[in-house]
Image (cartoon, rainbow, N blue to C red; front, side):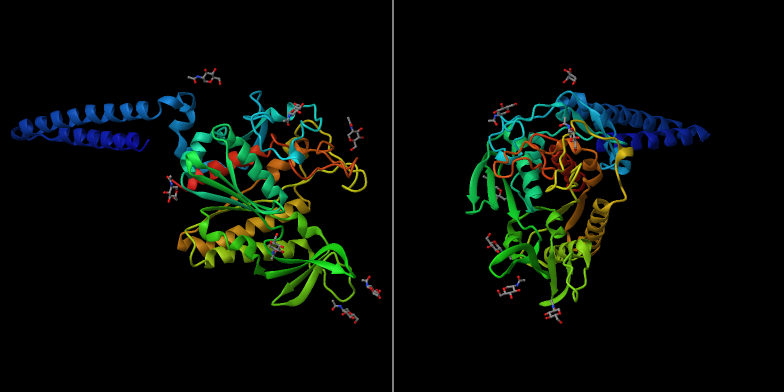
Length: 423
Ligand SMILES: *[C@@H]1O[C@H](CO)[C@@H](O)[C@H](O)[C@H]1NC(C)=O
Ligand SMILES: *[C@@H]1O[C@H](CO)[C@@H](O)[C@H](O)[C@H]1NC(C)=O
Ligand SMILES: *[C@@H]1O[C@H](CO)[C@@H](O)[C@H](O)[C@H]1NC(C)=O
Ligand SMILES: *[C@@H]1O[C@H](CO)[C@@H](O)[C@H](O)[C@H]1NC(C)=O
Ligand SMILES: *[C@@H]1O[C@H](CO)[C@@H](O)[C@H](O)[C@H]1NC(C)=O
Ligand SMILES: *[C@@H]1O[C@H](CO)[C@@H](O)[C@H](O)[C@H]1NC(C)=O
Ligand SMILES: *[C@@H]1O[C@H](CO)[C@@H](O)[C@H](O)[C@H]1NC(C)=O
């Protein structure tokens, strides 16, 4: 591509020269200029054929992608990957629960009896360009020698597990580390020298469960200014960090800064201010990104924030009969962009922008994986009743995402977002 525009520049130069040439009347110079013309003409032929050859040799395997190849620059400038719609695509998923051996029990929806498969026949179409279908070889060549970590709650883990499946079509990963509770896990793709981690941290900051009279309350004491070292200790080995978190912030949590109680979320205590989940989410991401920007023994880190992943309970909340049994996406016009889902996303977008303005000078990169609106359109992508709920029969999971399923698109967006910045 670079070669082609270079040659076009040269050709323009050539024509300008030629025009000037014909305005000259000095006959004695004629021989000199005609020699020049001959040289330029030869140059013209050479430059014209040279880029054509490189184009064919370097892209011979990509003949089906000619359209995206010819105009990548234009696409990248104006194309917002996260603005678009779901369109039907009968190619389906690149993996199945047979080809991928690592699908967890709870998100293996087909194992638990989900029958409809239409929800796999959609692809995300950004308005101004195409989102390339996931190609493991391209992923591996982009991330050779690198370590990528998904840091957050079980939905962060959900995305990591989707990526494991997408990559398994080319190389079977090897599990090299797993803690007793299976909350911290490391996989290696040894043939491609790529390491993938999941680091559990449902708040990113220090959090201690509130236990009153020996009974856990389900709520936490959150120290919003103290980073959780369970993930931050790993930062020096990480090249790409994908952060996400939100759902645990909706519990009855108490909020601390500098060791002092400053407020709570939904606590209904008479003398404690309810600061709301948005406040806590904002401060937690701020603390996490500060840690990255202040890390002395880290490499340059490419940080992504995956925005709020909406749940889709209908007909009630999770614990009073709510479920999600749709089998088709909904249209953009049906999506509610005024609700709290949208507020959480907005706060996350603001925080990544702040981190970028503080950190890009020192070589860190901060980008967003803005999946909120994309997934608001996919109420059909959750396990619903099909998650092997032996102890909670009748309860639906409308928070996590089936594998395979629309969550696989997050990793297509991840690869494309990184490729755009990381060349
Ligand atoms: C291009 O794609 C079409 C449909 O996806 C397929 O039928 C065709 O074989 C492809 N051609 C090449 C050269 O890969
Ligand atoms: C895969 O899904 C099918 C239904 O499509 C199911 O019958 C089977 O048990 C699943 N197998 C595994 C290994 O998950
Ligand atoms: C794998 O990548 C690491 C980090 O870039 C590098 O130090 C190491 O030599 C690579 N190993 C192989 C076998 O290529
Ligand atoms: C770190 O992980 C360990 C083991 O899972 C856990 O007991 C501990 O509470 C975690 N620390 C924080 C600050 O969350
Ligand atoms: C804890 O136990 C004490 C003594 O049994 C009781 O007075 C108190 O109300 C309990 N606190 C809560 C929050 O239940
Ligand atoms: C709230 O007020 C009561 C009574 O004044 C006091 O005992 C309690 O410690 C206070 N709670 C907090 C969290 O400050
Ligand atoms: C889907 O769920 C709704 C309530 O959310 C219920 O009224 C409807 O009967 C369900 N449909 C099926 C096919 O189960």
